[in-house]
Structure formats: C-alpha cells, structure tokens
Amino acid sequence: MKNKAKSPSLKLGLPSLIFICSLFFFIGLFISTIFFQGLGDARPRSGVRILEESVVDKEYDPLDHGKTGEDFVESIPFQVLSWRPRALYFPNFTSAGLCERIIDMAKSKLQPSKLAMRKGESAESTKGTRTSSGTFISASEDKTGILDLIERKIARITMLPRTHGEAFNILRYEIGQKYDAHYDAFNPAEYGPQQSQRVASFLLYLSNVEAGGETMFPFEDGVNMGTRYDYKECIGLKVKPRQGDGLLFYSLLPNGIIDKNSLHGSCPVIEGQKWVATKWIRDRDRV
Ligand SMILES: O=C(O)CCC(=O)C(=O)O
Image 1 (cartoon, helix red, strand yellow):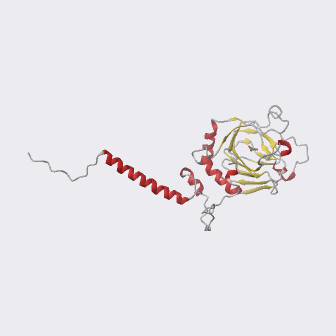
Image 2 (spheres, protein in one colour):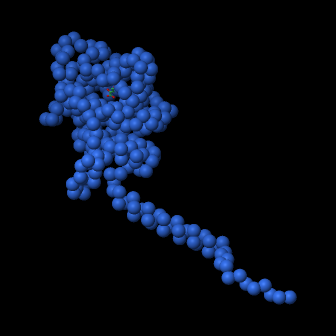
Image 3 (cartoon, rainbow, N blue to C red):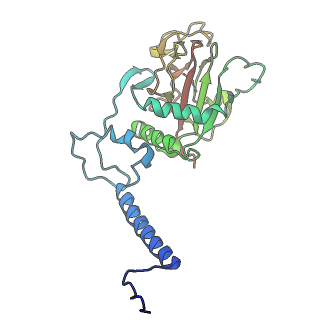
C-alpha cells in the first residue's frame, strides 16, 4: 500500500488557535486605545457621541488651546430671558431620545421630594410646599454616559467646573403637584452657617406638559417685590417646559450676594406630567 503523501496545508492545534486569536485581540485593543486617547477627554462615550458632534461648528477654526481646553468650536444657542435674575434659555439642549432614557433611569427610584428646613420649620409646617417625587442620580452612577455628556455641556455654558455640581435631581410632577416659590441659595440668617453656597441652577426639561407646570419667577425685575406675595401664587415670568430645552439661572449676584429676583418655583401641573432634571451648582468643589 502506498503511503498517503502528507499535505503541506497548515494544521493548527487548539492551543495555537487560542494563541493567534488572543494576539489579534490584544493588537486591536492596543490600536483602539491609542485612537480614543487621541480624541481627548472632551469627547463623550461612543453611544452618545453623535449628540455632541451635531453642535461642533465647522465654520470657525479652533485656536491652540491650553491643557484643559477643547479642540473644537461649539455653537450652543440661547436666549436671555431675564437680567434680573440672570436667566438663560437653551432650546434643544438635549435630544428627546436622551430625555426619555433619563426618565426611564429615574422612574423606578422616585421618592417624595424633600425640602431643606429653615430654623424653626418642621415637616408639618412645610407640608404641601413641594409635592413632586424625585431621585438623585450622579453622572458617575449612570453607566450609559448620558448624564456625563449633559454635565459636561452644563459646565461649558456656565463656565463653572462640573466638580461644583450636585447630583442630578430628577423630578416628576403629576396633576396638581408643584413647588412653591423659594430660593435655591441658602441664606445663613435663615438656614444657619453654610459650607458652600448654590450659585446657579440648571433645569433640563425632560418632557412637555400639556398645561401648567411652568417654572415661575414671581420677582423678576423686582415686580411683585414688597407686595403681600404668598409664595404659592403662580405669577411673574413663566417658562413653559419643552422637552429637551434647558433653563439656567443664577441665584447669586456677581458680588456673591443672594439675588432676591431669583425667587422661583414650579406652577401646579394642570394637564399631563412634568419631568425635569435639576442640577444645582455650588461655589466650591464637591469632591
Ligand atoms: O420644577 C421646576 O420648574 C423648578 C424646580 C425647582 O425650583 C428646584 O428644583 O429648585
């Protein structure tokens, strides 16, 4: 019997196959690490990168930037709603899809919203002041990267470092629910000594509301100040929630004093549901 000639084709055993596959895997990992490092820290994670690219303005040539700067020019449209308080409105700050994903993140975690108490106040005496439900979610807890992306964008428009921000407070108001007029800054004369102070608030409207639910500024431009305003009435400048839009206002004047015009609240929802993500930004690092 003739011996079968040995075929010159390559026959690989299991160990060799595993070795080759691992080699390709590590080469791929190495190349992608180098590529993404090149994009710098300013780029959000891939799942949501499309959102940020849509606002990069190709019309302008970016300048050389410092170590903490960015290599792109960005357009973020806004409208000045008021100078007293300083309030800016950002249409289409975020897409509707991302708003829905934030609502989904928060839905199962809602608890009755709480209030910071002034000296002498109690749960009983403040009952009915704030009737929404809410939950706190920090950007680091959100593994999808959506809150991280939004937090970076808020830091850009305020020029207040993201490390000064509290976790997002995601709120839901149902029909009849509201937040009576209040200040976000804590007056030490009423609340006692403060370690740090809230400088600004950013509200991202996560839903439309059929009727009611406006964010109101009863003392805008000093109007209604010095009257017998009862903090419940929904008057003054009213901002109607629109899904994906943002509202920024400052609670402190440039000299660090609380801006009396920044009194604000949420009018009762009349029809539909209101969802909003609030970020309070402080004058000091939170980390
Ligand atoms: O829901 C709003 O429109 C206002 C929320 C608010 O006043 C706050 O969270 O401090």
